[in-house]
Image (cartoon, rainbow, N blue to C red; front, side):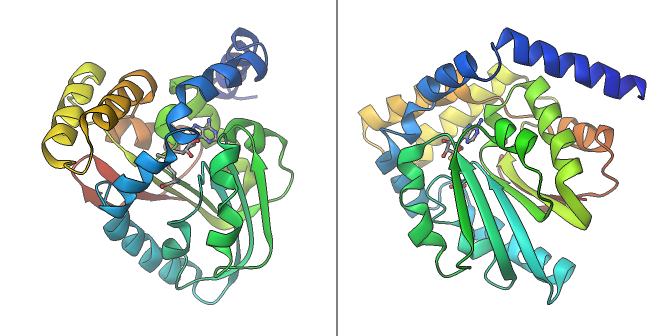
Length: 257
Ligand SMILES: C[S@@+](CC[C@H](N)C(=O)[O-])C[C@H]1O[C@@H](n2cnc3c(N)ncnc32)[C@H](O)[C@@H]1O
């Protein structure tokens, strides 16, 4: 085993032991993700106003998928799919054969099947942590797609995400990662202040109570990586290509293969 893999394996074990396998850890995660169980209607308002640039980023992703896979029938794994209301936009020019999605919010998943119906009829959904899904899945995929979910993982977990994902991709397969990203010289605290100042100024559809919910959630649960950080994690896991497909303020779309 290569030294970095030994290191990763030790880190993984540490992450699992300190989190008492995924059990206790997941309860904490679910608590801090309450916004996506009890507060999905607030998130829906954000989607409706396109504050996180889903429209523009998914459009670039759709172009990439068409260019990369051409007419191939593709299998898709989506991590942190939520209600999957945006997902079909990314695959609107693709031939999706099978789709497997997971999310911690069982509530959000209830709407996912209907939202994905235009994409394929072969749909599997699992209400579970994305690392658990990645770890136990035995199938391989053409696309591992994740949008605004990986920033909820800590650094060790992000490393596990890239490493597991590498093993689950077929030859020629690609990760599509959409997420908030810190500037290379922006510390976590600075990012939180900058991002939330921007939210306060521009996300005007939110009332004071909703802004407080977002503020609390972002401060307690968001750990975006820097651009170089993502690139480094991807290369460390063995990916050769790291391409920025779209960038709108802190909101990025990447293809990684
Ligand atoms: C900001 S929402 C994004 C939803 C959708 N992908 C989108 O782009 O609109 C983040 C989603 O990630 C899910 N999530 C967060 N951490 C997760 C984890 N460790 N495993 C699985 N899902 C997770 C949340 O439950 C939530 O549905």
